[in-house]
Image 1 (cartoon, rainbow, N blue to C red):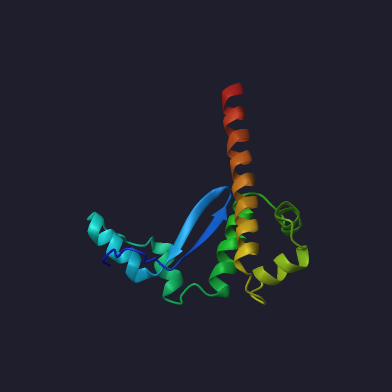
Image 2: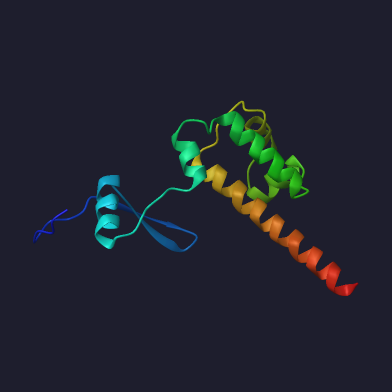
Length: 128
């Protein structure tokens, strides 16, 4: 990746939750990491997804486990995520694979529920 005057890197810019990211070719990313002398090892979840082992059934199992651990019903999680309960039901039964936006809504809703649960638990412990 030699820098030449007037050349541009082919990339996409996206914003998620007010944070800007740049998506670029993996070869460019690897070259940048090499030049910076850093390792860019993907997280285990990313490897799992890339290997094809992260199918709809695995997603459904993880979603159900996390929803139950957060103490949420399907209806409550769907309401918090802003999706239809029927959609969540189909996802959890493995009948459909959600798009990125739907997964993101579900994760954010569960994160908020888990955080609220942790805060409530902490408050209960302080008052004892």
